[in-house]
Image 1 (cartoon, rainbow, N blue to C red):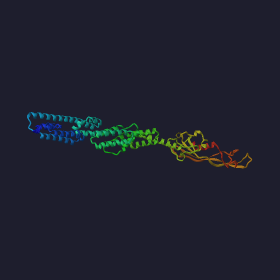
Image 2: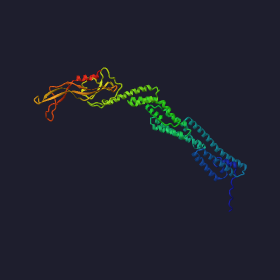
Image 3: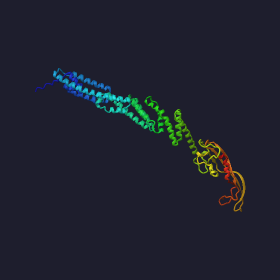
Image 4: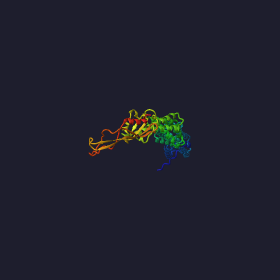
Length: 469
């Protein structure tokens, strides 16, 4: 059998084949019956357009895609075989041009849509509106990524920046509770966006503005914590540094309010520190007068608390720490004319002989703190003889002594000593009988020295010398 002659390649018009390949779908190759070239180039175009361009999305990859498109056109032009009959030429050119126009029209429309989205995103970036930018970028689909790779790249960068700024904003909101760790994290995240993603400065500004708008917070002491952190934060030379403007705006009122809060909680030392910080940092502030008054009030409260602490912990006949280490309470009544009411400590027996009207119930209505030592033996006043066993036993001599005590009085207002002497109280001695206790059943007689029975009037007379002026 005679073998069939080889199939003659279809004659095709050069312009038609070039136009068909301009569709990016290798239509020209298939029109020229070059299926091998058609399938190979179609696969390359598919991978380039649907995988490489959307994932790399740079201007360079767009240039590569354009060069590939030009290569398809030129190669198809020189691959075509002619001449072609006029009717076939017209038909081929119609198909090729239609395919090219359809592909380029779709690409053009996608570019227009991508341009509109790009402009919207640019406006959102200029106004610092991350939400609007993100809403617009949600509309970017695969076709737009193919049509406008730089838009996709810029959009992805904006999406990342907005996500990072949103996270930073959340941290700064949490930091308004006074957690400086969250404040550090939030500011560091914004700083990273500013350093690594240029073009998003306005969006960073919006996050900083949102944080500053949250000041002052309800708790003035928390506001002070935040403004103190802002003041001490190292400068970074970007929009974060303008947060220091909020310090002078909010800190004076916060320091005053924080001092008032501590005063209400009776935390006098903390209150005083807050008022002092206000006066030192803002000497011309309108709240200075109130802060000065607050310091004076806190000082009095601290003095009162100190005096009370020094007067605590005393038992029967014991002296408090105040007696060895006095402290002043400036609001106490000055020592002077009339009855200077006192708080008596140390010897309940002797203080119990004094008029009740001389005693104060609290430091706030007392003038003196009087410390009375234990009873000791004073000067002898009389000696008498006693017999045991109903007068039939041996005679015993007993010497009676005054009762001696050390007395020290402090003026509460100043903490100074106003009286420091030893008193000896007299009284009756040599009673008809004396009581004593025998030892081991042996009557050894009464003690040779005994105290007089103190005369309460004598005690009053001696204490009156400094209690009543």
